[in-house]
Amino acid sequence: MMTNNPKGLYIHIPFCRSKCPYCDFFSMAVPQADDNDMFLMYAGTVLQWIERIDPKHLPVSSVYFGGGTPTRLRPETYFHIIDHIDHTDDCEITLECNPYDLAYYWNPDGLRQLVDVGLNRISMGMQSVVDSERKALGRRATAEDIKKAIGLVRYVGIENLSLDLMLGIPDQTIDSLKRSIDFCAENGAKHVSCYMLKIEPGTPFHKIEQQLNLPDEDECCDIYLATCELLDEYGYKQYEISNFAKPGFESRHNLLYWDCREYIGIGPGAHSFLDGKRFYYERDILDFINSRRPVYDGEGGSFEEYVMLRLRLTEGLRNSLVNERFGFDIPKDMFDRARVFEKEGLTVVDDESIHMTPKGFLLSNTIIAKILD
Ligand code: SF4
Image (cartoon, rainbow, N blue to C red):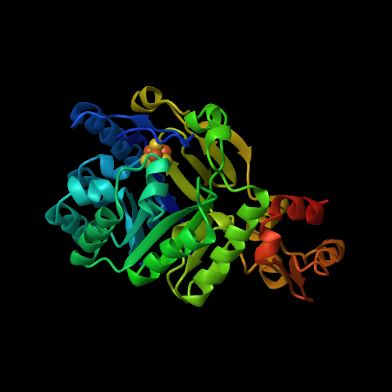
């Protein structure tokens, strides 16, 4: 069944086996072999919130289990959750996976059962295929483990595989980046997400930043532009600042965010945008388990917000879409301000649209602020 106003459902799984030294996502390290009581309570709360979704927002057209590390929990947990969700027949259902968990803790039967209830996309946190780079990031899996994990994904018949790459990591060079990109292509990834490492205050990396052999700002720019080029050579089209896909494999769930569409988020730290209003859950697992309600976070969906999100996409801002949605054209002075950057090869502007080039994406915050000025 299709809905006219499809919504995405994001479910946050805030558990990891250990904390990576650069990470400031909301997650809790649960290193024991298993901590089933807490996981069961958590999954039970997720199910309660799923049952409370207003039927007018259903069925959802995409489901995304993100983390944290969703594969820290057992496959059966997701079987029950997916089974409870009212989703469209062609719903995109993504599970973020840690390759080490897939290689050593999950088995084909568990994953296959999830495919039977609708799981059809895997997003794997690979970061790099170079073992020394992965080790520097505190990741346990080796390139062989990643291959094993991909083998499992293929074995259960999931074609839609996304691999995450991290850019600007200690000791990374364009040559080592190329090895990771070659690996993505050779192992049949349909989608690649590339995130620049940011050293966040409060993380272990922040304390030892000077000792990490990090590429400098110019080198990071070169690494980003090389990523865009190398992925393009393999047929991965850039469709967003950090995302590249073979045709037809763009992430439907994430496109809802960048098109400023509504979505439901469940879990501590998760955000929702529903009926024009934004909400979030406090970043507190016990609060969430005790069924604390989401906090109101103001109105959403303004033209400015739409512009900020759409300009992250390579498709950019299109007059026809703006008119359809807001009932007016893109203001002329916005075109004029965007044209200023065209001379430097940062934007492309015609009568109908404004979009940024890969070089422009490197300065996206500044350019978007100026276009909105
Ligand atoms: S696995 Fe992901 S969420 Fe967990 S600590 Fe590492 S980077 Fe953060």
